[in-house]
Length: 260
Image (cartoon, rainbow, N blue to C red; front, side):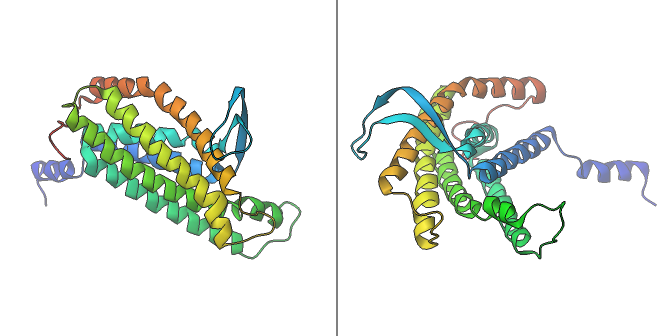
């Protein structure tokens, strides 16, 4: 029979530390933001601008922001990555990136299985064409989003760590915003190029032809404009996150000279 002291030791071995519990919550929120972005990303939105401007690759001036609804939560993933990078280092940030990527691929497999399961012909069931219209056409966007996510996250993690070392751990806004605006540019191009051009070229469908490359660049550029504004606007949230983690959890940022 284990003694009370022995049982206490065994129980303590399975208890999460405060830092571990925080990491689990951040990782879960991170995965949720990615999966939401992947699922709703099939829908494009258009926000008219009060002005217009020209770019070298387009015949018509740009007068609106056009991008996918996936960007509603996608910027949050970069914010969470920066917080994890700050307190758990590059290894911790890369770990949640690979976890989220694995969860995203798992959801993609389930989506395909659900689409090809035999249909129950009943009046209360969703119409197969409606289901296929959403989840079938979402495949290209889903894969594009995953590719863009991986490219953007890995660049964000590396740039954040680089800026932190160069500034000696000072100027949080520079490493957070600087790494995000660069990585969001990479993300915007990848998601637009893969979803609206490459995927539709590889898997042609008369109902959804590939977008002209000019339009791909337009979607990427205007989407990045909005992401840039969002990245700058959420900079105070980095400081707020620092304050809450320090006040509620008592963690201190990982020193700049440590790789994590």
